[in-house]
Amino acid sequence: MNAIEMRHVEKDYGQFQIKDLNLCLPSGYIMGLIGENGAGKSTTIKMILDLVRKDHGEIRVFGEKTEDSLASSKEEIGIVLDESQFPEGITVEQVNKIMKNIYKKWDEEEFYRLTDFFSLPRKKKRFKEFSRGMQRKLSIAVAMSHNAKLLILDEPTSGLDPVVRDEILDLFNDFTRDENHSILISSHIVGDLEKLCDYIAFIQKGRLIICGEKDQMLEAYGILKCSEEELEELDQQAVAGIRDYGYGVEALVEKSRIPEGYQTEVPTLEDIIIFLSKKERRGMK
Ligand SMILES: Nc1ncnc2c1ncn2[C@@H]1O[C@H](COP(=O)(O)OP(=O)(O)OP(=O)(O)O)[C@@H](O)[C@H]1O
Image (tube, rainbow, N blue to C red):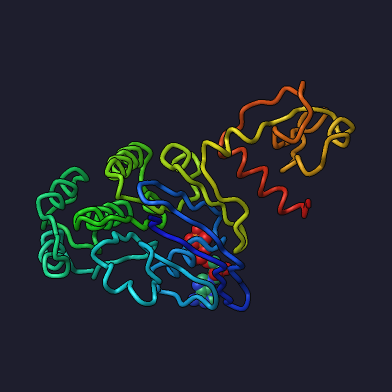
């Protein structure tokens, strides 16, 4: 079963378009949605949640078309959006009371375990007095306290310091120990996603540049350091991106498409993303 499937999804905002977006997140896995500011991550997430209407294509969550079923699968999806989700005057205790009424499977014990873990005051401060990081933590605690099967998280770790980010990534990792649990998480902090995710989808200017299993991506590509002339001799289809390097060039290449004998270095996910975005910017084919 797939947790999320998007087929040929399109959205036209006039100045910005999402074009032919196809992605698939199998149940039990974590997919990272990477893209720079304005790439279309939030729009993609909001279309999955039917908060923004797609113009074309099909989106399924747990196998059901979202327009038919999303209201009924609300319990099953834990959401953290990029914007504030709570009224300004509310305290942690009041959030607990409200959520108890909203979610059938609300787990108060888990909620307070998480809010205590995040050092959020139960009643001494109101939401508007929380720092941005505290507001994120509260959203995460809510998303993880109603026995959801799928977490959809838009930049959940933005504004958090590295130590807390790391602790939260561990929480997300633990969540997917259950093979029915899945996560779609957007971020522009590639290092976080490299650690956490099984699948990576990289979006740029509304287009999906690459989508697939992270380990396969890391295995398929290599970084080749050579002269411009040497690079020109290679099958140009193998070259996924170039950057200047000392006296020569550094190229991201598909290892299976270059002749044996070339020494390549193992890329990080960040290398792959940077090379691919440069390719798009230079308009390489
Ligand atoms: N309601 C809207 N009407 C018109 N344009 C919109 C609307 N919402 C978003 N956009 C545009 O769509 C583009 C993508 O925005 P989106 O918020 O999806 O990007 P993002 O990748 O989440 O960016 P960030 O990392 O900065 O949050 C931007 O150019 C934005 O201005």
